[in-house]
Length: 303
Image (cartoon, rainbow, N blue to C red; front, side):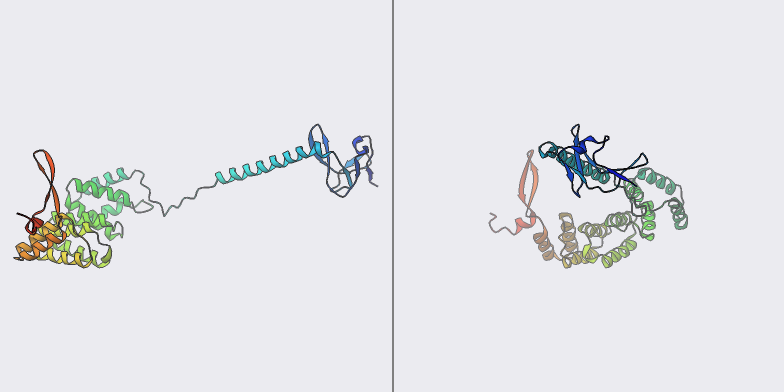
């Protein structure tokens, strides 16, 4: 039989007058530390600790309350600290197929230019070499290809610009306004007006409401270089329909196109409606604000 020790030699503090029986957790104060104890049972000189006990040792609240509250507050702070550590050590997720890594993109672009520069001007040879360039890539190197286009544009290698840009678009990559602008400029410099016109029709059909002023200006400049005033008027009509305000250079080219077609009234109307009212010139080393030519002609107060 297990015998319960309440007043024993092992625990003499249980015999104090403050000890009495309750069905609650048991606490006692020893060396300014708070302990939770249970009733001991002994059988054949073996001490066992049951899960619950009825012995309760009360103590003065003035001595033990501060230690209990301090221990509780410390335990709460430790828990909060552990939670913060767990949040900080959160695992990072890497998405292989959604990333756009720009590492070593400059070296890749130079490698592309070196490969293309050594090829003959044949579509199959160029496309095959470019396909090999991307064979071991986990995703299409858009950044490297865009940098290569920019370098080729600065070097004025318009044929290579056309080849690389067409290859990108055939892969469904790089269909941006910047790529379209570079390709239209290359068509202009390489005297490929028909290809530029077909590309422009595709852009207008696919991006009717989002064609930028820059692309409109690029097409008007292309037609102006190749002396096609009728085409300039058509592009300008599309700009007015889409409510795209032309810049000063575009206004000047459109006005010159109307003048070449013998339509002076429309030329003056375009300059007055879209041209700047004032312009700045340098006179005697100073920047002077003066009226533009179109507004000088229509000024009723001019002497």
